[in-house]
Amino acid sequence: MTNRIRSILEQLEQVREDLLALSDDIWLSIDHNDSQALDEGVTFKKTYNAKMAAFDQLAGELSTLVQKFTAVKLDESAAPANQTRHTTERIIRDLDQRQAHGLTEDFTFKRPYGFHIGDEAQAEINTWRRLYELICLHLAGHDADRFARLPDNPTFTTRRGNSSFTRDPTTLRSAMALPSGVYAEVNLSANHLRDQIKALLDTFDIEREALRIYLRQDRDAEGQ
Image (cartoon, rainbow, N blue to C red; front, side, top):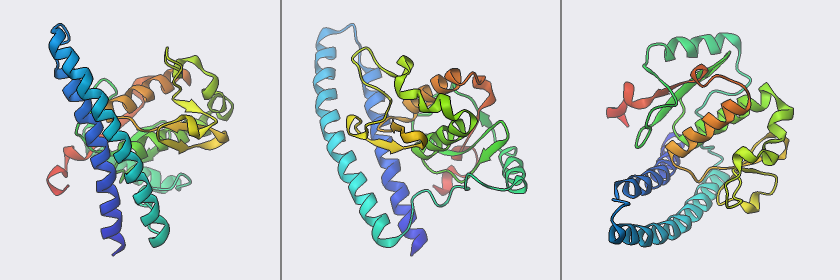
């Protein structure tokens, strides 16, 4: 039953990510030079965002309820952060059999499987949110002081004052707890998370090409 529960939780998270991707796709398909189409698109986007926010909150609460009652954790399938060198080498050998992808690609409606950066590799990842979390944890271990200052970094604050990292989770639509009392916004599509990872690597003075991402579609899409 544990595997079935975890599979349902993963599917719930994947639906959330797909809905975010669908919103991006529809918005990009609109002719922004057509005033009527743009007005209709804005109306759609506002309504969609409101419905998506309600769904995201309900999905998050449902996932939390199920995980708490069953003691099945959504992220248990991923390798632990304190894995041994032997385990890391085994994961790298597995990843090397797959096609590596970079941060210039479109990840819409694609599923992550793993990543390799520096001396760390992780596999058996099922959602972009989990991949983003693991990369953030890697960066926190790489430079804890710099990571703790992310909420103060203007790179991660929009012109309207919305921050991607904060010390107050109530200011985010969907907050993910990270080290040093930092919380990250994760109510983002795969491509938006990709862009956040780009900015993070730049902030930590790590070449973007140093990160290799591996997708489930490369080998086992038919099994998903």
